[in-house]
Image (cartoon, rainbow, N blue to C red; front, side):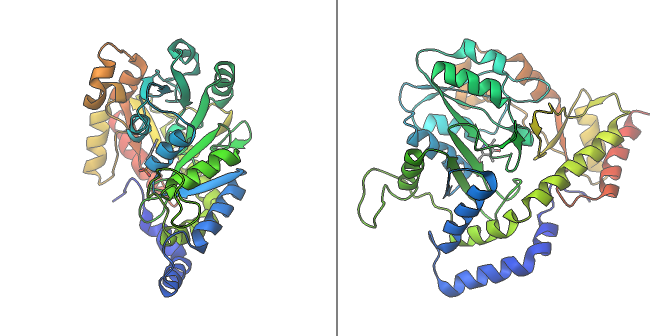
Length: 365
Ligand SMILES: *Cc1c(COP(=O)(O)O)cnc(C)c1O
């Protein structure tokens, strides 16, 4: 059996350190905003090269609090991709703003910078590029557009911890970076978790207030905030795993290269394209194919998992129906109909990759 992701193997490698850290936290009974959260924020900021890192309760909250901190709200428009997880657009709605969906580049699956400018109106306040599947979005062009039109650039880095573009790690390129530590993400904890990064001390301070009931000093409240803190036990797990993130991401890149090699002769599938401007960290390994059902059924028969990320682009979701009735985004629609993600995780072995690709190539012989 080959799963999409194997969290158990990774846990067993770090079991001693993680178990010890958790027991130590239980002993100290300091569960909220304790020393491990502070240390994790410092270590994550140092790894990424970010001025400030603020840990929060989830990736969804990271996006929500980043938008609030930046002052995006009622009446504002935020440009983003329709080919992403729903949370990207949910956060825009949480603050009362409207998501404006712009079609994607079929090669990278990321927002197509060439189509951003035509979507800008006087109400546009921000762009949220998503580094989808671990491939950094085209940050140079997007940054240029944001500067020209005075728009905030808020990166959705939920799938790209450790990925880079133009020599800079994702989350340090735009005005704010939003990370998720959901268990299956490239850096994942054992529950929910997230983080906001920024170079701006003012934005950082506002996110810090927002995550903790608008409070800097206990029982003194400057604004209406939220309860959105990373808990101490999750911070212990993230600190243990952060030390190995380079190895994990290299492992993903090794698996992707093997897939590319074994699938090279199978013209019925298009393997992921790397634009070479940055480092793709392969949160997912996603093919395009006209034979999706046949492939996934054969894989399932061989006890190999596969998944469709994402079957319905956001502008076609019921929840956004009213906003998007006349909106046609043909590239996203076509990609959503043809994409298929294969198992990928840092510990995946050569023979496991061979097993997956053998099933696929056998179909077309
Ligand atoms: C996972 C994910 C999120 C949300 O993160 P959670 O931690 O699950 O709230 C947001 N955006 C993208 C692109 C994601 O993949």
